Every structure is written in C-alpha cells, then in structure tokens.
Image (cartoon, rainbow, N blue to C red):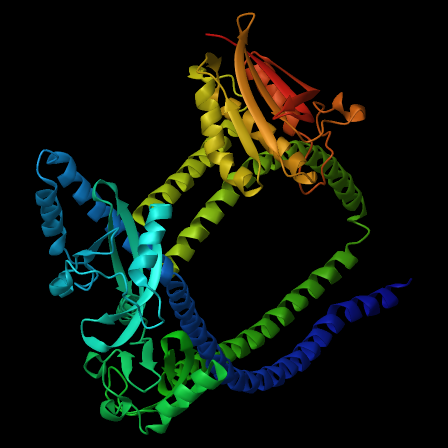
Length: 636
C-alpha cells in the first residue's frame, strides 16, 4: 500500500466516525424527544386512572379487613357467652361452697340464707346478670329480680316454646352435674315478649340446689357489637380518613363527626341527598358490597362540600354496613403533583439527551484522532503490542489463580449461607407474624416480647456465625469450658420454629456434661447435622418424623448422638459423605462442604471424632431406620 492510499485511509478513519456519530446523535436525539413527548402524554392519563384505581383498592382492603374482624367477633359470640356464663356460675359456686365449709356447724336454714344473701346483690354484664337458685323439688330459692316468686314452685313453668324450663335444667344437673340450657324468658324492661336466653347451671351438692345464671343472647351480642363499633371509632387513618358504619335503617353507628352518631341520615345531613344513604344500603344488602360516588356536605378539615367515592360492605347478621371513602380533590392534588414531577423529569431527560449527544460526539472525535495516531505509528508500536499481549496473558494466569482462591472463599460463603438460611427464615416469619397481629389488633405484650426474643437470639447467632467463620483458621481462637446441654438448647432455640413448621418432633435427652473447646463451632456442627436430618425427613412421606438427641459418658468421653428416622444413607455414598464438595443435593441447596467442615471442626477445633452409620431401632413399638451421627468429645 503506497503513502497516498495510507493517507486516504487515515483521513477516512479520522473524519468519518465523528461525522457519522454526529448524524446518528442528532437523529437519535430527535427520535428520543418525540418518543418522550408521546410517553409523557400517555403517562399523564395513566397517572390519573391509576390513582383512582389504587385508592379504590386501598379503601376496599381497609373495609374488608374490618369486615373480617366483625365477622370473626360475631362468630365467637356464643362461645364467648358460654365462657362468661360458666365462669360466673363457678364463681358463685365457690362463694356458696366457701360459706358452707366455713359454717357447717350452723343450722342448714341459716346456711341457706347466708348463701342466698351473699349471691343476691351480685350483678355483672352491665348489671343485667344475676344468679338464681332452685332446689331439686323445683322450688325457687333465689330470684333477685322477682323476689316475690322465691319459695314458689316452678314445676309447671313453661317458656314461649312450651318447654318446662326448671324441670329440664334440674334433669341436666342431675345427670351431668353441670351444663348449658337455652330457653325463652321475659326481659325486666319488656314483660310482654320472651327473648332467647342461654344459661349455665351447676349442682350444689350440700343442699341439692341448682345454682345458675343466664344472659339474653341478643343483649350479649349487642355488647360485642358495641365493642367493635368503639374499636372502629378509635381507628385513625391519614388525611382525616375514617371508617363509617350505619344500620340498614340509615342510623349512624360510627363516624368521624361524633355529634351525628345515633342520628338518622335525614337528621345528620351528612350527604347532599338522602338518596346516597339509600344507595349505600341497597348496594350493601343486595350486592353485598360495592362503590358509590356522592357529594359529602362537609369534608373533615375544611367543612366544604366535596365529591367522594366510598366502598361499602354489608354485614346482614347485624343489619349494618361499613364503608370508607376518598375525596376527589385529594386525588386531583396528588395527580397534579405527579404530573409536575413528570414534567420536571421530562425536561431533565431532554437535557441529558442533548448532553449525552455532545459528550458522545466529543468522545468519538477524540477517539478518531487517537486512532489515526495509532495507525500512523503502527509499525513502530508493533513490538510494544506483542509485549502488551504477553503481559495480558500473564495477568490472565494471575486472574485464574485468583479465581481459584475465590472459589474456595465462595465455598465458605455458601456454607455460611447454608447456616444462615434457617435463622433468616425464622426472623422473617416472626416479624411477619408481629405485623399481621398488629394490623388486626391482637398483638399482646407477651407475644411481642417472645417474638423479639426469638429475633434477638437468631440475630446474635448470625453475628457469632460470621465471626467464627472469619476466624476459622486462626490459631488465636479462645477455647472455653461449656455444657453440652447448653449447646443443644441454644441450637434448638434457633432451629425449633422450622422443625415445628415441618412437623418434625425433637426428642432431646442430653445431660449437663462439661467439655472444653469452641462452643459456637459446636453449635454450628449441631445445626448443620439437624438441618441435614430435616432435609432428609422432608423428602419422605410418613406421618411420624423424629430427631433423637442423646448424650452419655463412655470410656471417660462424652458421646453425643443425633438420630433420625429418614431411612438412612445409601450404602454407595455413606463412605464419601465427609469428602470436600461431595453432595447429593441440588447446587442451590448445598456446596458439598457442610459435613466436610463439620468433621474439620470436630477433629481440629474440638479434639474429638465424628462418625455416621445407618441404625435400625424401635420406638413406640414401631420399627425405624435412620442415620445415626456419633460425636465423641473430651470430658472435663
């Protein structure tokens, strides 16, 4: 190639790339600008639609959560009532028995009067509840709300259904000593109509009495309903949000405006038209739930009429509906704010496009100039290029050596991940449980403290694990005297939640034997062995899954055994399980260094030995086969 041709090629290489790059950059900038402008307009429409959709989903989720709470409370009404009645009667029985036992020397008539007088004034369940007493001859001994009937026979007393109430109660007590009974009876405030009443009655043996009490189911359920409504009233949401409740007659049961609670919607004038309330009731009764849009006369915080969309849901068993809504002006404000942010981002993107175009052109220009210089000095730099290649090959060899070292480190990291998987899972499940209980309002202090303790234990274990692996090969590890029993208990505190979740039963029979060495590393060993047993037990299809942990003294050594019933280790691999990188698990589950590291810790750091054999045994008259790990440690 002659000099003229070389000059032409160099000029082409020097000027063609920047010119082409500038043209491409300009075309790309125009294309990006037009594309961004179309996307901007589409996103403006999408934001408004998405905000309304998201707000609907949010209020529906919040209403559904309260609905399920109400449903749960209503379902538990009868059980709660039974528990309350039984506790009360047991209290009355204890009072009567204490009076009887402490005054046996007195005449029976005096004792009877003392017991009746002691129970007569006791009231409960908002002063509706009281105790009654009948003898086995159907004679009324105590009836605080109708004292004039005391001393009369209730043998022929029938409720609205024709049932002989006292006869049936006495029959139950005679045969069962105690029991529940449902009948109908007049309320003190309504002597014309009989209401369903549930009672609990108990045999008082000294006088062959029936001591009992009852509660109108309707009244008790109303108490439960009032408790839920008070809970709803106390709920606070951002931006003056609230849950409202109305009965199917249009009366407000809860509302952020306390002055309209108890008023009918016609009196409250909370909405622009009464048709809104009718629509809400019809939607709840006919469809179960749905969205309604209306004008609320006074928005909380600004006391001005505002368009509102609410989600309402009916609870027919209590003839009521609950709902929550959002205001149109709040949505518009948020949408406008998002649009402004979108505009700012649009302009920023344009600036970046132009800036990148300029920088890209300059870079290409500089590169093309440098390229021409490289080509011009090609022959002079040929020798240097060969040397660079040799240097590159040398670096590649060094990189391969480094990668080999990193593979070893990676194996260690995988082992750490294997040890961390269980505590991290426990922390996640425990924190999720706290969040769920907090959302539905059932998080007790005891639950909270127990959950925090589990999380703290697991966190401390994670910290100790990484420190132990960091100093694994260090000669400065401090050995201490510790208890085998403490090691097992500390291990089970960490892994028990996962074992319980997998229906695996641990039978721990370890003794308080003292050994000497690295306590945390022995904990890692036991966790690894229990996790291996758990993994194998998960693979088998059987109801009974066990892990047995035992310790004893033999030949002045501590023998620690861990035995499962997972079917044992296949004969063809049992001889290889302590080899490095040997594994039967998928790559995502293990690295093959778990048992290798376990043996290293036992032999080199605890001066002990470890062995795994298949073991056949009987438990609860059933024959099992499993892997038995035997660890021998020094006895202090």
